[in-house]
Image (tube, rainbow, N blue to C red; front, top):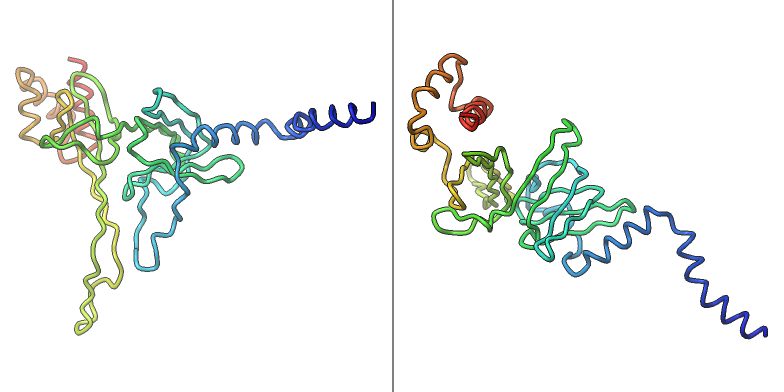
Length: 235
């Protein structure tokens, strides 16, 4: 009888232990396990002693969701950051577990900026082409409509250019980030400039010129440009 009691106790012990784990810890554990096949060890926030600059789209951790290509499954995560330079999504779980997802596995992700509380939505650039070549990185969705507009940030690692004789330049590698406005007729991305806008406006050109003139908008300012795109999408 004592042996049966001991066996029963050992059988139910895991259930007792699980019962002592908080819902948050259990949810985090299950989520990490579910992503284990897709994730890789967290890459240190430091880019090394010889690299200067921030590789991330935004320096702050923000709560959001990610959707993987596999099974088109969406996960809600405690916090994430988009690593532009390394094409990855870094995840921070509630029990301080850190993971990194290869960008090629992520179909899209969303978050609310922790400072402005504004929503940001990104889609994988590999589903689009630019000059016939799939885009490496994520596109931030600025608007969807008759004209779909995206913001794309390119990150480049610049080599040291220090001149010892003149004591000028940089001794370390530098992370350089450049933002580009793009729009897509279908899945082919094109730069959003004055020449392309003439094609976009087409028969609505006079209306758009009038709207721009009345509201004193400049095509060189992103905010003004987006106001014009939003207006055009309503016509």
